[in-house]
Image 1 (cartoon, helix red, strand yellow):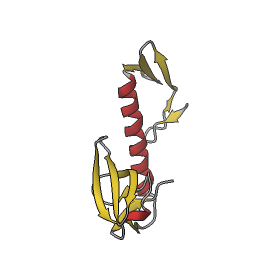
Image 2 (cartoon, one colour):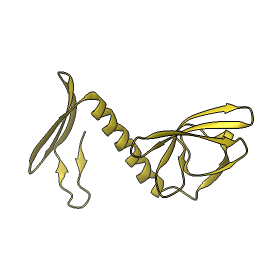
Image 3 (cartoon, rainbow, N blue to C red):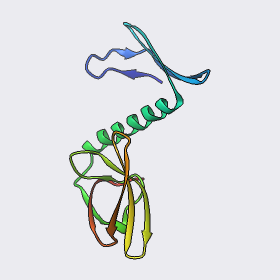
Image 4 (cartoon, rainbow, N blue to C red):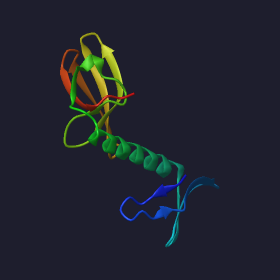
Length: 127
């Protein structure tokens, strides 16, 4: 995987992610040297989630106007419009009530109940 620093145009020489024993090693090479981090699999998953959410946030800057949908039309990956990223992690309809599991950019999860016809404004629709 190759990358370039958008400010300086200096290329990252390499980015490697490999299992190392019971951990995960992340190696990034730049003209100034190499950085190596070793973390637990759980931390690697947290990093992957954080990177995914940051990418979603960056994508959302480029999206059109927010869209409003009914609570019973929410789907996994939808991002709620607001000050902080809140992504739909799960949806379960129970008659006229919809149970939504949200996940924050920090990786916290919580459940909220909505009337099925409640209007929710989204920054971005999930895939």
